[in-house]
Length: 118
Image 1 (cartoon, rainbow, N blue to C red):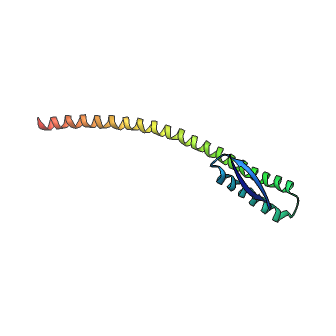
Image 2: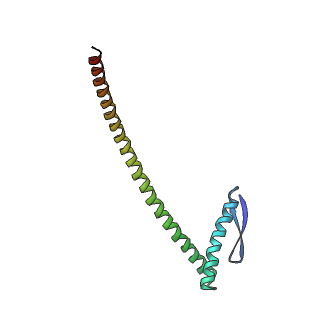
Image 3: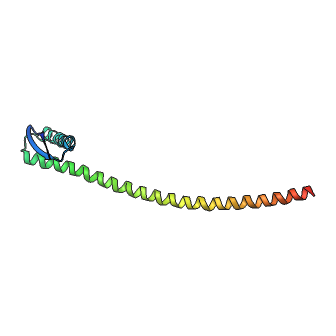
């Protein structure tokens, strides 16, 4: 376990994290701190608890929107995959028809060629 110092709302806190996760923890703390700073700039000194709750809710709202968008995108990807599979099936049917038509034409051409050579 590693210890990381982060500063939020002019308060430094020691946090523990898994080895190798220090940079990520600092990034997350910085992201949270920016939200706290923005809210404090907007509402003034309303107390750490209220400020932190508001920042947490703001971030939760963004996360909720992002999760909704991810679900929508996953639905669209699934639909595109289904369509792709349908098109592949259609393409195979068309390919079979074309091959059949080519074979029919080749057979007719052979017949014409034989008739011309006789």
